[in-house]
Image (cartoon, rainbow, N blue to C red; front, side, top):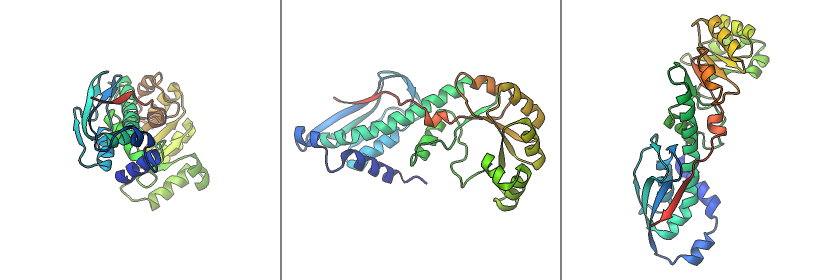
Length: 274
């Protein structure tokens, strides 16, 4: 589980260190200030509560008024929140709060674009474990704010038998059999496949979900027909905004995209004193 206070403490320590020398030199102690967080472009919002916690970590007396909730699409120029408190502390929390807010909103925004691309197909967009170390919970939360779904959180909460597991176990049938015997009975078993032969093996072994890795749309369509409802299907590998619609139209149930978290562009957000 994420210890948000620990994450915030580490981020602030990294940025402030022994002291903010510019603020100490320029701003008189006890100076009050009112500030606003402003969207500088259109995006799907995520992380506003995390930004709030950054400022409250520095001073619980700081007033923070949210004007939007996470998951909303905001427009350029809109004020996201008002802040009021000690000017020195607002300045010290600014960059860390914005880093979280910009990064998380970028993930939500990219996810929303993927979700919109496949509207009406019946497929779902899901994330992966390709996340920033230590920030996975925040990034997966942002995927949900963009309308996506979470794949397994980590190695402990889902069985996903991948290429190297199969090699180590001696084949798909052996790997699935061992997983059935040893994994908790409530867990579904997913198997990664690279070609139609492996798809057939996974179906025969009784996999609950079959991951179709790096297959072109023609092969994906064949795989879905071959599986014929005997297992859920997930397409993965090289998924982009340009290709995701065609992938969804092959009939797969899920489309996983690492890009949601590893390639999202940070959104442009500013904090300005008023």
